[in-house]
Length: 227
Ligand code: DC
Image (cartoon, rainbow, N blue to C red):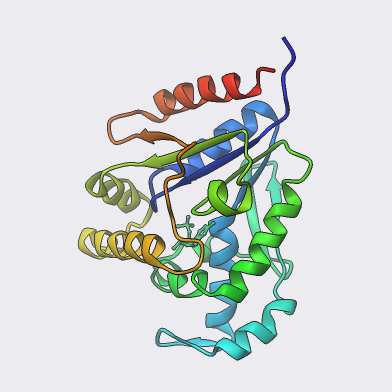
């Protein structure tokens, strides 16, 4: 049996383990992994640090003008086995995961100009296949012809619990509020909202272990790769 090189699109709600699964699959198949949320987070960090975004208000013209100076890239760290995000050559992997960025990023990721630039980069990365990409609009906009589309979700209580293990200083209430508001923003925005595509396979991992989810996804991948 011939094995096809494919693109794997993983979409879903915030903090439901999409990137954990995407990393496992990319390691398993030696595919390129792209965390598109990290790209929007890096743009958000740039906007906050350069006073383009202040108190939740964005200077849209300044941001649009700055887009050409914002370079987001990924480097694989062999020591930690993690793909790390770089903003204009500086490692921002830790900074972009803070609640400060989580609270501001939805306003950045809903802007048309920002999305146009990010989506163009993402499409380019995927043109030779062999990519696992996670985000909100991968199966709908970035790779509408992806051979495999997964839509991942989990209950908001479980997502809050998992996120709180990473964000030790934040209260459960703040984390849950942030998740709910991002779910709402992601699903209701005008530009590339989060939708479940008809051809996507849904996985609710509320009661699945990381390994169980991986094995399930692996079986879908193997099916999609079979010629
Ligand atoms: O997956 P994440 O939480 O790191 O994503 C950060 C934000 O970026 C989130 O609020 C949704 C948004 N996002 C998006 O709009 N489109 C994507 N393809 C990926 C993320």
